[in-house]
Amino acid sequence: MVKIRPFKGLRPQLELTSRIASKPYDVLNSEEARVEVQKEPLSFLQISKPEVNFDSSISPYADEVYEKGNEIFKKFIQEGYLVRDEEPSMYVYSQVMNGRRQTGLVAGSSIDDYFINVIKKHELTLTAKENDRIRHMKTKMAQPGMVFLTYRNVDEISNMINEVIAESPLVDFVDELNVIHQLWKISDSEVLQKLQDLFATRVEASYIADGHHRSAASAKVGAAIREAKGDYSGEEPFNYFLSCLFPSDQLQIIDYNRVVIDLNGLSVSEIINKIQEHFLLEQQQDLYTPQSLHEFSMYLDGKWYSMKAKPHTFDDNDPIKGLDVTVLSQYLLDPILGIKDQRTDKRIDFVGGIRGLKELSKRVDSGEMAIAFAFYPVTLDQLMSIADNGMIMPPKSTWFEPKLKSGLVINLLEDK
Image (cartoon, rainbow, N blue to C red; front, side, top):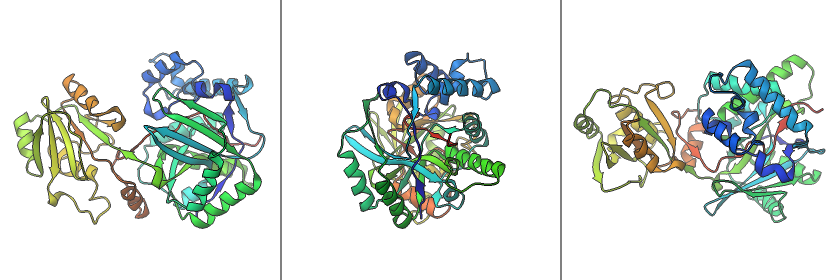
């Protein structure tokens, strides 16, 4: 069962929240983040992605980059831009995008739950990215970004959260994407205990929706602090990581698409002939969005195609073989385009569905890429089934939107 706890959140001054809270560090490259910081000098990206404070010649993994991030973090605290709550609390974080609301509980999730797989994973982590987050946390002794978790809905928990959001929020702002962000604080000890009890008795597992590197880094940093201290109670902040837990019935996965830089030495007609061995291909008049599982869209040579996988390419009784990312990899990307490992191959790139299909055609028409593929989104049931079976999804299988703001609530690893 799931163990959560309240913590003394470090939060922006209320009037500065909309200026400080930023996009997550991993949805922007360094140059895009520099532009954001130029527009908003108080953006939390200065802290979560501190290479923005240097020119592009500096490696984001240089010692001075981490030190600069810590320097700005301390400055924000000293100047009163960030203020720590005096009492342990949980927080309710609500987002509304295109009329759809999702509401999660911000709490500390147990690193022990992570180690024993009560917090379930569905992706592999990259060592370099994991080490980057470890260095950020160790330098600042803080977890600046929430891990996006989900769990199977429990009505009693939802009812309690609905009572909280019936009141006026502490924080209420609209971001540049027209997403509404609202935050409430729960500090009543009886309510906090009830929430902890409900998770401990009614929620068998939580699932990482987004934030595999942050959760892995948090768990490893917590374990290292335990080892260094030798004596700990298990309730110190470093035994938990900053998370926002959403009921699965509120979430929506959107597509995570692919673009490939070349045709692996093949002509357009050769590619089409090879694809037709495993897919039913039909040219479309305009942008085409896949309508169901096992259907893709493809953009090639200025034309859009619908592309339906033939029955022999998938097995819906197998959590992995039923995934469209597996089908595309095994029957097209690998054998036809020569993409053997999507995690490391430089010839493939990934485009979140939030950017729309026009982003795919734009990148191909520009000559930057040669071919693009769009997916029908993975379902929450597929994600949970894979995690429950201890399996790993292919890389870049899921994209959740809206993203959780960084710097909205921060967990300090020490009670000082």
